[in-house]
Amino acid sequence: MSEKVMLIVGAGSGISLSTARKFGKEGFKVALIARRLTALQQYEEELQSDGIEAKGFVGDVSSAVSLKAAMDAVFETYGKVDVLLYNAFSGKPGKPTELSADALINDFNINVAGALTSVKKVVPHMENGTILLTGGGLALYPYANFSSLSIGKAGLRSLAYSLHQELNPQGIYVGTLTIQGFVNAGTYFSPENIANTFFSMYENQTEPEIIFEEK
Image (cartoon, rainbow, N blue to C red; front, side, top):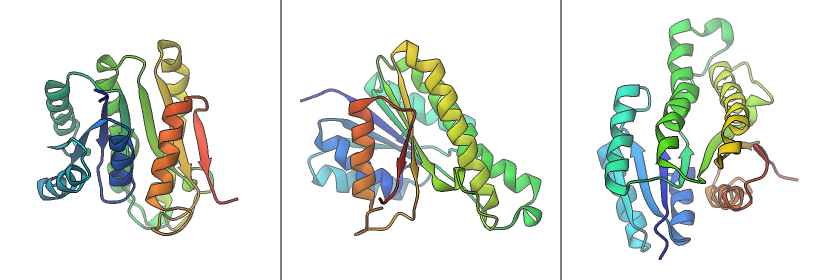
């Protein structure tokens, strides 16, 4: 059995859980960070029922102090991380002129700054590791009614490319999956299909960005 460890920051019931299940079935132990303990306990139970070793850690991505503390607990438990998936996001609906600066900054903190904090914390605990970022089509095609999330996904995409340039020479692959559609079970954009693509990115480790779109 592989002793590889995957850490998912911003764990939820959709993409995160499916990706945890995919990597877990490939022999990974899975650590999950989310705000709510009850949700984490549910994810643990679901994954463990599939024979996957999983453990949840309470942490709030909007707080660097809380996020760092949760990640420290992960490192104390597992000693290392082989794959990081940053899946946290936030976006208040509304047009740009309806958006307050404080709301924009709060969302940006979760969409981009939390990703940077996670990467900076995990890199010292990685060797030939993989960093995956959940992107979105709004980064390429901004939508006025979701202006904050559009800005956040654009920022995350830029961060992914910058990190790829910096960390690739160190043996760490960074890639973002730009999802060009609404995640929905039973469709091309199902969490399972997305999870399989994330695993392919981990295996191939080539491009800084994969566009996930229906042909």
